[in-house]
Length: 144
Image (cartoon, rainbow, N blue to C red):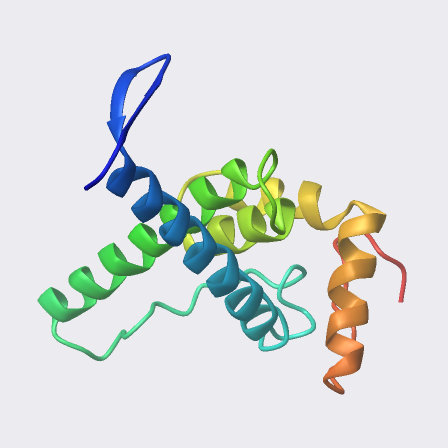
């Protein structure tokens, strides 16, 4: 029924290639929906204000731990998908930016500022926000 394709890694069943292709298309479409959804919901001063409000601060510590773990897992997935999209079809830089905003690590804000400070990135984000009637994001170091 299924054929075998050979490549640098050896034999790959046809079904595996089809499954990977379908997963790739699903991931691409998901990022086309998720990226705008997230970017239009960011507060306009997100990259200016240090957001120190602990997530689910009034919840049980175990629930908070699981939620933060899942948020970081989602961030890692977005970051890896964004890196892949630098050579594959998709919104690579924007997907990486979303991944970084979801992750918790030292130096996160400097990296976010470096990415969002690129005029091309800021223009794409703000044109998207404008389409949805949202105010433009304020970039770190931008004059009011």
